[in-house]
Length: 106
Image 1 (cartoon, rainbow, N blue to C red):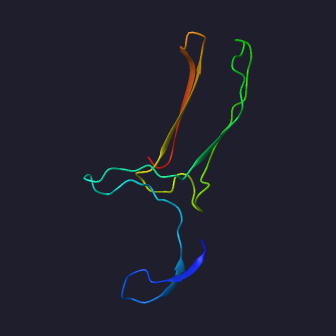
Image 2 (tube, rainbow, N blue to C red):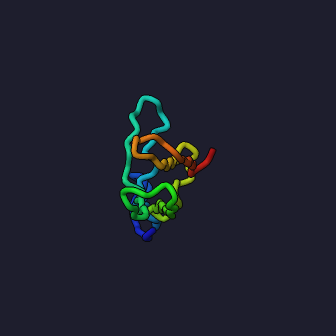
């Protein structure tokens, strides 16, 4: 985070501090305020063929990277987490294999 000199609180003068560009969770602490999704994460996924034979195996990699901030994914806010679900389906769209992972605090 870059160092800047600015007045954070009106009337208290200019001070040296760090400017934060990351959006935060976008989840209000108040139930009367609607949550707003903010841009913070990018998904990088392996390329795959459209179909595979039942005897084939494949490797799939999904990378979640916080491109817009210096903190990890998720930010550490207990209210902020990602549920990642990857499913393999057959030709009838039935799930034949599935995995679920939660990233973040429980």
